[in-house]
Length: 569
Image (tube, rainbow, N blue to C red; front, side, top):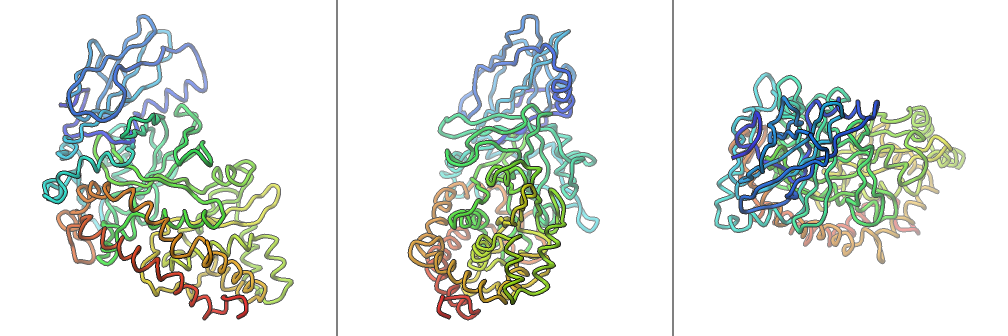
């Protein structure tokens, strides 16, 4: 059984743990505003990780006379919300153990969190005691789902793989006050379409490596992230945004999350749950194409073409000990990302995500689009727009999206654009949410046009002969020799991720593969039981054996017919 005050039965802990109650925000604000003597932090005798046998945990603090309180339900431990620690705590099942120390006359210690995962118990999670629905659609509740589907867990094809699957990639465990997650009035998961600072909640997150490597634990803020993915009827598996602020304890996450090269400090991270071309989409056709890799591949491709691009990885995510599925933690290409990769400070940048201005203002963007819409046939207009736009970078961004035949990049969403304000710089574009790509081998998205979007810039710029020559030069660079979009290199980038998650996908299937068939059959069928062997592997094989080997030739012909390739055309 789980230990702790006000605990809910069936609450299992996540590989990435976000832990913090509403009192945490107040405490951290007080510490940062009026720092004073504090109780020494607690220390646990057992570090977070994976376990198969029960054990005891001792908790101590170096401050004489301090009292320790602990919880196991995600709450911030206090004298009211926790249990007094008086003896070693017996851990027999998946447990998120949080503790803090208190002594009169001193500020309390920080809250320490350790997640202990018993994977055989994770397979039995039911979510007992948690809400039966997550929001409403057209006045009707959208049903919640917490269990690992027995039809997968007990299937002869997967039952010996499911536990190894849960240890095949890193784990992130998020712990937070249960009410901040699921309360009807204030819970972010029960109100997923709400956004902004008022819907950011304090939490704690842990990264746990299955091989025992040192991960991290940090307090932070958490919000629901995304667009259509927020709608509970569209996807019950929401994405999250982690925000690192000093009021939670640390202003940045300092950890080489995406490898030894590149930026190691982060103001924010996005935990992408996926929407288009996943097993939870409303379209039966898109569910059939579920692969979980497309957006990561698109972002990797822009980087392979020589430009900054948001990095990512894959983890298993747990929320207050409940396994939540396969997630893709990624950098968010906002102002801090721009500053880290392009120089300067975050406040130096204009940043927009589609039609949303995230930083700065829209004055330079409006001027850019006015120049484009006025026509760029002559050298004068082309020269003027090059002062505001990194044209070679835009071309590479366009080529990547045309190669993938992006079917979802209008003026409103699914791309970022940044420009340095001080000193004045040129707009650059970043791939984001590229899930509607890599679909049909013959698909062509070059005819799509929408004002205030990258496609509009393309259609206006292609009127100019100098632009067409530059486009052809860069297309040849990327489509031939050792270019990023040759069959070999494009396929290798995809194969890398397919190999990494091929076992983890079994756990995702157990968590969400039966949702549209057994829980909420929404919009269009067929409503199938989505599995690795019957659905994921055939899509991976299609892409690796048909799409990538042939797509380079197909897209080169599309460019040729548009007068954009080769150089002598």
